Image (cartoon, rainbow, N blue to C red):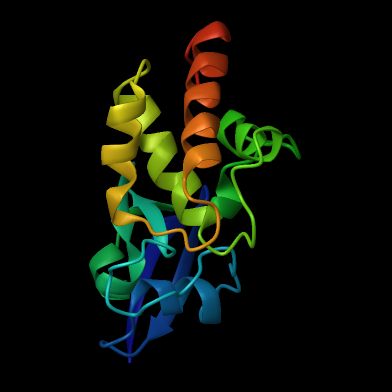
Length: 160
């Protein structure tokens, strides 16, 4: 066993894990943050996407020990004081989800896109989401949600 200490959703956590433990396992099984989903176990679907030091990472492809000393944000860390993040709200408003399995990863990657590019085009959104699969929606409403969130964030002064 090895101990890893990381900041998860703003809270410092120390966890004893086996060296082969994946970050997604640490989040789901040790910290009970089950919003991060396991879809494929091969880093192909993006359902396990979280932020590590503010950048999107597929947590099924990262060892928990690699996150030692780093800051991890999961879908549970997106809302503030019970208020949905504008990206979460837009997914709800625009029906950018169906079964919801891919939604946490989609929200995480889409939010990073809007942070990097506050005015993405539809094509840029579609390109950015290529590594995250949705088997239900056909992506139309997901793209609409990302564009809506980007517009809402800009109108609120860009702070998110």
